[in-house]
Length: 285
Image (cartoon, rainbow, N blue to C red; front, side):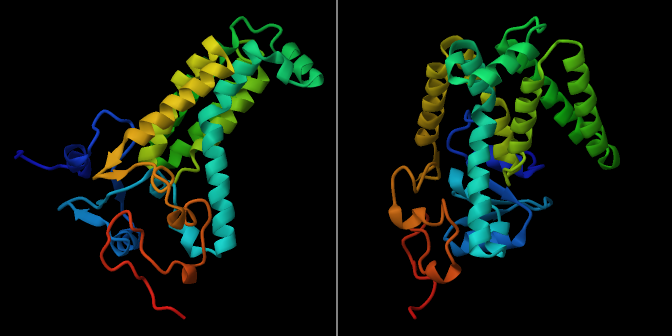
């Protein structure tokens, strides 16, 4: 009972199970084929008058990481793109933390030649690896947010030119090292691989606490952060559906459409996560 519903976000906040979690528990889309595919899987589409977005419930984290383009290409190409997406999501989460942990506590893991080059590049850097990574991560997030807020004709240009100028100036000024700029650049580019903007926003700030744990405890701290993150994901529910399904709880019959994109002729049944009624998609043969 409210005075107005101005956007889909108001409905999303009112119906999600865990309001304090940074991860979205409702899928929001403007694409008709995504809504149709969700309905055919047994999920529910919520239309809001006056907004171009449609909410789809329930969702899992793997649903939010899948792109409609995966099913518009050949299944081999869709599978390869999906693997690249999963790998670089892990890179976006853990690359800065791994760099800080290894450079601070575990230098013996780095090959000698590479370690000498990193030491040479950091010779005049006045900050420890954690502060160096924190400065560059914050600068990158500021530039990315500024690029979004600027007019479309200027946003991409300012983001690219600003990143190049700031990164090169920071190296020449001796504030950060060249390897750190490369790590942050790879991390930032990897975060753009997520097809859903809502989950990419959540994954933008999660590396910060993991990076802090890595600076304090090394790789043990990084793994502690990963364990806490996975534990939180396992606790989440989206309208009663486990957020990590079908991986946890494990359902091997549904895993084949998570890590690979199986040909459509083999997808004969609907996901049993969402509905137990009319599971058959197509006739045999």
